[in-house]
Image 1 (tube, chains in turn purple, brown):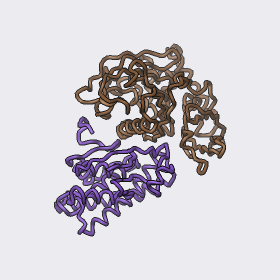
Image 2 (cartoon, helix red, strand yellow):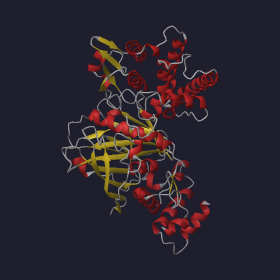
Image 3 (cartoon, each protein chain N blue to C red):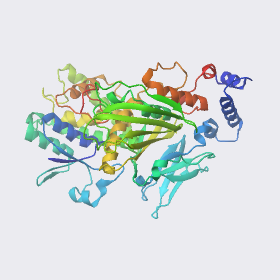
Image 4 (cartoon, rainbow over the protein chains, first blue to last red):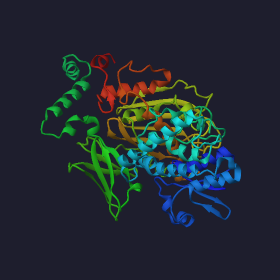
Length: 208
Length: 327
């Protein structure tokens, strides 16, 4: 499978990370989104008319939605990550999209000079982080270590992790969110975990 | 405390003539009264120097670019013909230039041009703008991190260093004749020194700081090991504790595309970002003894002492006058 990838975008990292967790080999094709605007080139728009990344290609099949990619990879490699029978999965994946539109947007504005209202995006993200912290705190007490009730981690963990782990880039902090920090570490120590710039690997000297 | 420092600086016999002159200048500006509040507070060393504020390749005729330089909001616009205009949002005057694919602005009175980079004129070194990255850290902290050899094996493990090759061998630091410092004879084993590297090798480095917020390194090219790639880091001072890093690559042709070079350098810089943003105090302390340096920090110590000697106050915690005299 070929992944058209931008190293700095959480949505791309989600697919790289999940592929590593389930052992799916990917061929990465870097796209110079920043500062090169290659995602607006005719070549790229021919591949994905939305001009968004990532894009996953397997033969004639093209995926342009990063969450759909997670589901597709899970179905192919390890369905335990994709509890499709549980409505809560829809809620968590929606939460991840809300994080993209708030925390992810504030990060792009603050760090890469994208247009938009960083303060408003950050305020929205702050509310979401508080709510996820609250759910995690009570979840831990009920013996649930992942965001979904299942004992196995799910694509929902990956989908929200890639934003929350980069929250400092958006001017937010996990300092007063201890349950989130513990859950972040749980994801980081999952077998097969890979980092991206801004996310610390479990041990600094364990390479890629 | 500030008044005490000023008294010391004016004491006859104070050995730091330049410090005394700098203190006097600041005093005059403060007493100016009619000048804007922002102007009176800004260190003349950075106020009268040139700083990058945008890259031409990121400017969009459909949308003006807004940024902040030394607490002053700026708007940088490009028209359909490619003419770039930088304006202060408060209507104040500024000087504008364009070099190395970057738009440069001086808010004060420039007493010298934008830094001349000889390597930029070498025909086989295309200048590649990496893409600005904003960082919540003081400008001098960003420069100091760039000079640091000790972090390569940890923060950039697998790229610019690796365990167990984390030892920093002795290197030399000297003053540059035009001001600034140079560190030579730096060596580091790097598994992936650049996108073109196919194997790890001992990379030789030279570091220079030519202006307070401009630094560069020369490092062995994986293919042309007798010549050097040159990487500049220009730091745009936004506020005293926030900055925008503008890296510029002047690399030899080795089959790497500009896209590959950019992705690699962004990856490296974004690894540094959380480290920089968590350094405390936010402003770089210049007093000897504020930190406990080891031999590997020789270039950092030299940089801090040089900043003290020129009297920089922006983004730093100046050394108390007594310590400055002892240095």
